[in-house]
Length: 130
Image (cartoon, rainbow, N blue to C red; front, side):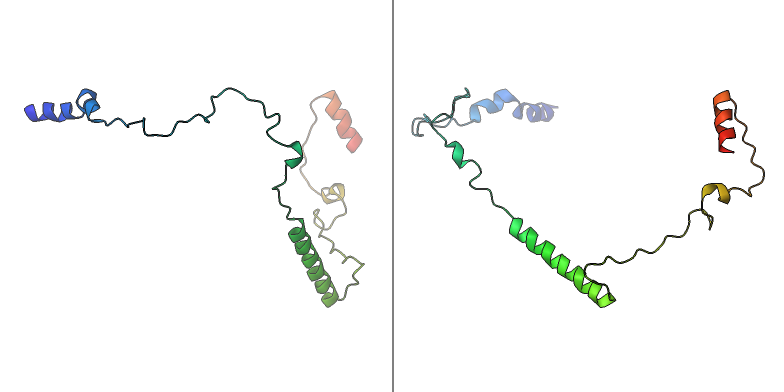
């Protein structure tokens, strides 16, 4: 029991507070130039014309990459036999309506359509569609 009490007391603040060493601040240089936290005006300290002087542009690198890609595309087109000014023709996508031209002709032969409009507005719209 005494051991537990001794272990608890060795980590208490009062036992350790006097062991902390205090720095001798007299030998440290004074900090007169530190900011006080109050807002200060920059009038006369900076030149507005200098804003952005350190900014670097990567335009040339990007332009070179674009030109390189363009040349590669032109070479591929030449290999396939396309004129550089012509665009390759796109292949037609297969019809989404199973070979029919539109959705109405695709669903024309469905049996068992049992939609019945419930309101007058929807009934008029349904009759208009039919």
